Length: 164
Image (tube, rainbow, N blue to C red; front, side, top):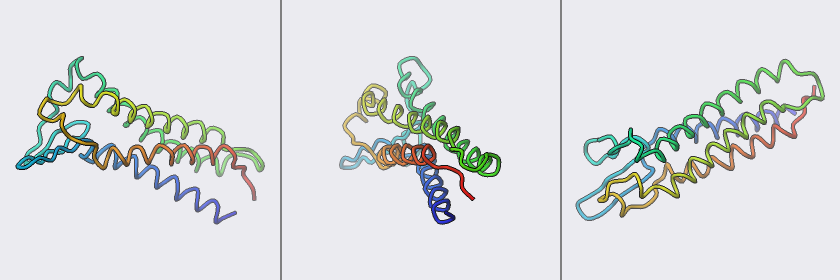
């Protein structure tokens, strides 16, 4: 039982780390042309210096703001669910399920899926014209990888029962 508990905790921590990396790292969109190497994340577009994404605070970039908000919310929910799991580990009775932790973790998974889906569908609409000829970067891939990890983690909490 201790080995399973350690595995679940490590799996949850790995999902949280992936969420932090996907939210903070600046490689959601990469433009590589001869003489031009620009990396864009949810807040900045960088080559040698970083500039905030054009019109990121206006209604025209509402999609970008939705991606920012849901990725931050997913990261917060993942961290909260870890602390709730630790609290439930000591507070719930033997034989009960970690239902509250599972619900929070599945909500985090849903937020990641929403953020990555919006970014997939609308990435051309909030990039400047010269940045539209790029490709998805590593942070985008990490966000999509963290989606099934948080979902699997939430489902593990759903079926997990407290034992001695």
